[in-house]
Length: 387
Image 1 (cartoon, helix red, strand yellow):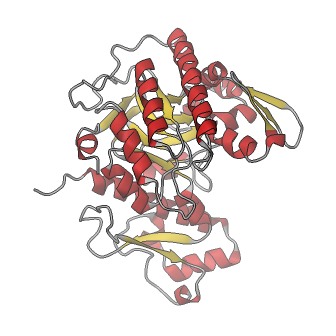
Image 2 (cartoon, rainbow, N blue to C red; image 1 turned 90 degrees about the vertical axis):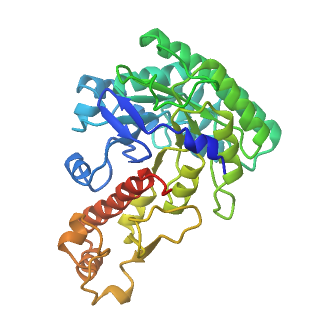
């Protein structure tokens, strides 16, 4: 466990739209919406920020339209922080898995819309300009994502592209946004992200390198030399059997400056979040809780939690599949300790009924419940360790 990194992790990220207390979990509002709920719902259960996807918003409705609407915050009625992902992972999932969808070139990515054949060109520069049109509080560089099982030659090529693209993104960002006051280095003393004063958007880089600790370290050090406000762990963070790649996560955390925000991109299973947080990661996002909610899979705390802070290896939660017959006559809430709208007013039996008849209210209530679970998980992880 990288105790030094965890001990120096920042506790707040100040943005133009408010502070993000760290650690934080940000629901994926990929296309400017968290499915089944609206911005008022999210505020009501304590969500402090969201993640949108610049690649998908570039495709529809278009980032120029969002800018004309007053930016992403006004467009979706969200007055809290927004992080925009560049779309590097989507390039991986859509193109690397099916080359017919496009081509990855040295300086750009050409994506073909499957339904129309229309070309969408992504370059490091265009991705930054698109995110500035959105008005995001945190922007991400375009990166070249690989499969962790790809050979070393492919991983090295992806690292080279990622670093070169990051340098171009940095130059484009600096040409549009006032220069940073100071960039963090490994020699900086522990801070609470004090050099991030919240008066401008921030730029984060993405560390690639697949399953190679050496390449991960090389990529991280090259990005640090360019200088970013924070960093994300890039690529698929799981082994083929679904286990978390703890060694790779630790290697990346150790290679980056202490006191800078570290984003575990796409890591969202509750026990995985706890494990990554212990390594020093403080920002999390994932579609898992909202997707599980729409599939009637809801989380509940085990006795003693979240009053007791979960630690890696703890069996601190369980998942209930509401369509199971056992819940048909269960008149308890999903979680006796939960204050979400689903648990405050409804029983497992009623929620199961809503799912069985296909009523849209089931998606909304289940989504609010799962996201409230994550809000409480973050609050618990912010609690200082006893002693």
